Image 1 (cartoon, rainbow over the protein chains, first blue to last red):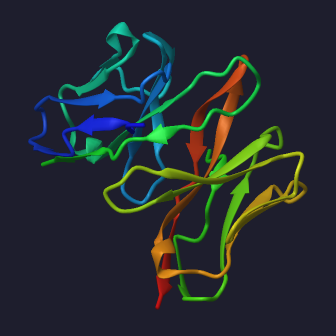
Image 2: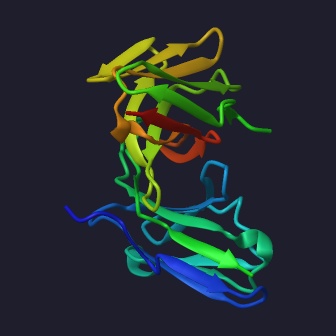
Length: 117
Length: 115
């Protein structure tokens, strides 16, 4: 079974530029997450999709960040314009969506390391 | 306000000895706890979990202990191996509706196992 794919793996941009990240979840996984991991911290959720609908985007800085999941499969996360504090690893994860009260393991991609200069 | 805390940024142990990684949480309503392991340039991978109805869960060399009264969990690795060198995160899934969603992570502990 193929894992979660992300691209690019690394990106360096100047502040105020825009950048986009792409994620392809595990086939059949209805739920997709984008996390931001700043150096020395744990990952923090930015946005959660179930199929192509947003479940939670309360921590997404909507003035500069946007995300979409067209057709309920692939997803893109965009930053426009980027700030220095956006330097981080952006992790995509996916999971099955259970119909019972249970935890569905999240599988993470390798991440995209963004450096904003 | 950080709901999940790992107060030790790093831990160094000798190969063959025990590694103990600690995690504290604030919300007594949490009912499921996870440990993830992360190697450089890779995403976190699930390691072991424990439900709040248990106080211990074991999987090979890895054992997680839960102390609900102290709101504390720990991960024991015995014996430690150099390949265990990684960042370890404790995490809690948030419950909502009929399933669990986002993970709230601790800050992570860097484990280094010396040969």
